[in-house]
Image (tube, chains in turn orange, cyan, blue):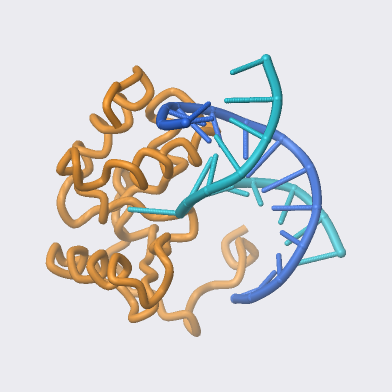
Length: 125
DNA sequence: CGCGTGACTCAGG
DNA sequence: TCCTGAGCCACGC
């Protein structure tokens, strides 16, 4: 990226605001940058300048809370490592719980196991 | 102005 | 949960 457009600038700025130990999704960044549907644009920017702008790129994941890079790739491993170094719990395959680690969301301190997770709203309605 | 690329996302089945 | 298809967007050429 030689030139920076408004969108790009916004994206860069926003990513830099993600605090340590928290993560954001491509879509979330796009929305904050004023383009709710430009998640792919965010991807492009990261793809072409993650290191160049010294961004905390490892804090950006897809909407499912998974690392976007291909499993097994060097980048994937590096991202896992960087996240864990910040205290983020990442599964071996690169997934984490957005309910707990997503930026601008009160983390659910409670640990929820897949087996114990409530099924629906029925129990409280 | 159009086309290909990319670490996407959402709704369905 | 996984797989598809369609929609979306910023760039570089």
